Length: 498
Image: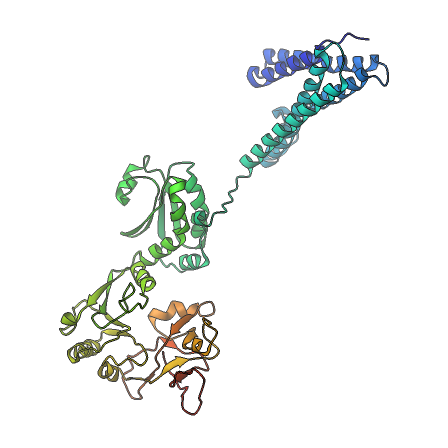
């Protein structure tokens, strides 16, 4: 029997190392050819030595079983070396593949030969070295060492395979709701309706984590309408950064003509998480406001009107509405009693009374009437059952305010489950006016809920300037006695507007 010495693992490791040096460092030429030739000869000698040892031992002995296992894994590693030439340029060129096909061929056979060589080498050398270390062969120890080496080799091989796959198939899955940056359907529809192109300039350094998370958003936006997206590094593009006022990276600009809007993010992912969650909303607001002329909405004050924030009576504010106005480049300006009794400012185009609770002075009403007769626009949001003294203005506008509260037993919001929920009327019927054109187009998907709406109707023969903005749904009536049960004899249903 052949004396057990660590000949096989030494020959194999030296031969593999020479092949690696010859291919990776020496390259084509005489030196590389010599190293490859010697390395291949040593590898073949290692397999041959293991085969001779296997054949020279008696059947059923522990030495033969160990040699058989080692021979199997050395053979697997040798198959890997034999597959290696399939990745050579000379071999690939003879196949006549196109560029993509050649790249795929190299990728497949590179992974195949490396995994075969690595798994075979680790398992064979790990078990074989243990087999040669002691004078007396311990089969259980050899099996344990082989299994441990094989497990390690497979684990490392899996890591390399995953790393290669990730590099070739770059994908990002983000499970945090605050960290997602995807364009909503509303944003994409808004982009698709743009009539003039918009430039989006993002200032971020290369390979930035935040940039990777907003790229899907920017790609979706650019594919949906006339939006041109440019990514720049503020440090490398100082001229463009100075034009837009970008002092650092981590910011988006929307540019149209001479107008621009700025959206602050951050280059640090931890600090940018919250901003990423609101990017879609901020982008919508910036897109709505850019390129629009700055306008002012005058709002009456001093009569208990609804403001941006909750009032002293605990009634909720109109913060969302004010936010939309700002997004549309519309500023709001209060008109207290002292100002309203005078003629309104020359730049006033629209005056709004948002849910007043106390009476207007006659002088204020006269001022609003003069404004209306000069061609100004008046927006009235009136609470039912509250006399605020605007009847002379309504008469001038050929509008009559009806008694009662609008109710509907079918189209309403469910809150408490009782009959009083019928005052939370729902409607998606909008008038023909510039302010409601977008709502009319989206009427199949959206609706408005009005709590305690008043009914209005036009007066025959009046001026045609008054426009209905909202109409009630079919089956609505004017609730008079407060039980919210329909009394067809006493409670009319002829409601023209809300």
